[in-house]
Length: 181
Image 1: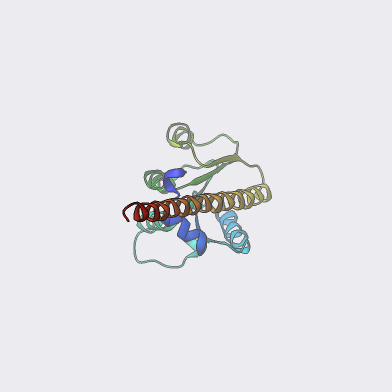
Image 2: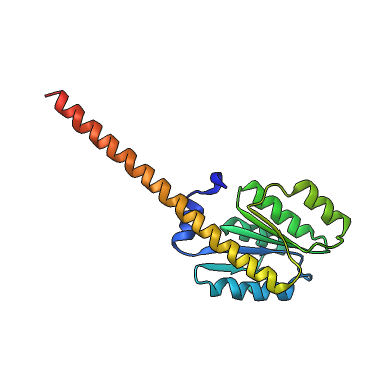
């Protein structure tokens, strides 16, 4: 995560955190709609769920990869079905070093999905399993609050370190000015 605590995600914290929700289009349709509403109810985040964003001029893949690029966090939901688009969304998330939260139902999966999870899902910020929609929603909301708090503390530490460097520099200039007199 440290490599991604950059101006992009810190900008999100100042405004609103953009959370892209990725999953197989059919498998979690109702869950994604509810999740969007619940995330936005939190007051500090905006959830992007592709099918709720309206008509777009480009292909679903192009639009979803652009949404991944514009987000601060990507939430992945995995169940039984394999989705090539979700696989590409994960690869884009990983390539860009974005924090990803992975939530999976502990069930027998399509072998392609299981292989993808086992071989390609590297250290996400969060990996959690769920059995009910309510459990999933609650867990994601708690995880987002914790992550936001962590980002705030990291931003504060960074700001404090910058201030200390500025003060040392100013102090060194003052001392240097006195020594040259």
